Amino acid sequence: MLGKVMKYEWISTGRILVLLHLVLAVFTVIGNLELRIMNGSDSVIPENTRALIEGITMTVYVLIVFTAFVGTTVYLIVRFYKSMYTDEGYLTHTLPVGTHSLLWGKTIVAFCWMLIDMAAVVLSVSTIVVAGTGTTYRYIWQEILKMFDDPVASEMIPHLIPLIMIGGILQLLCTWEKITASFALGQLANEHRVLLSIAIYIGLNIVSNIVAFVVMFNGMVAISRMASIDSPELAFGLMHGVSVSAIIFNLVFAAVFYVITYMVTSRKLNLE
Image 1 (cartoon, rainbow, N blue to C red):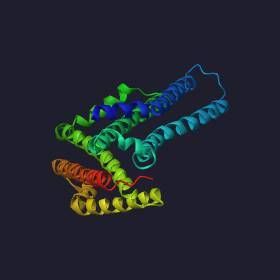
Image 2 (image 1 turned 120 degrees about the vertical axis):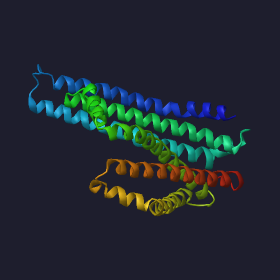
Image 3 (image 1 turned 135 degrees about the vertical axis):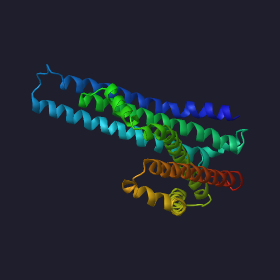
Image 4 (image 1 turned 90 degrees about the vertical axis):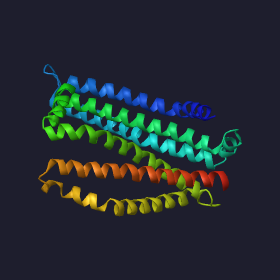
């Protein structure tokens, strides 16, 4: 049943999000072409005209990137709430699908879309930067490889990069679960559900940040003093410890928020 839920979610969300990212791709191509033409050595366009055209195009491009980056997340959040806790929820919860399958199906698809969106935005912006500065991806890659010239860095960085990436992914997952838990608790009220959900989210965010601060206080203090640490091994060791702590923290809190969402949705569902 999980597969069927995911298939339906991909089809439903794809109608909007595929179009949104196609628009981003089109404007990325247009921006690249314009920058390369404007910066070409044989360009005969007057400086003032060039600046005006670049300003207008970049303004539109920034708006498109912002819409893609923020719009994707907002759309997924609104869709989750409407399909689970409003009138649409009557259809959703009458399907022969368990609560676990519903939550996991929506979470997996939403999470994949957010990762796709982040990758698309990063790729788009990087191509614009490369075109605008006249550099190349090869040069950027060579600069990155220089970080591995140091023996200590070449040994430690490959271990830190996966941890940082995993930590970022789990942070995103934890944030999504926090949002869904806020919606689940907010729908218990009979009025002003959205406002209550926002207030609950702020409260959960404050609590989780306080816990994170207490748990990782020593590590954060040590990292803030990293510039004065003479030993590279010790510096990387501190970063490794903080990264692992962040992974564990986000994993635990994501699980807690998921349990809250599941328990409330399965036992205290209060549709509008």
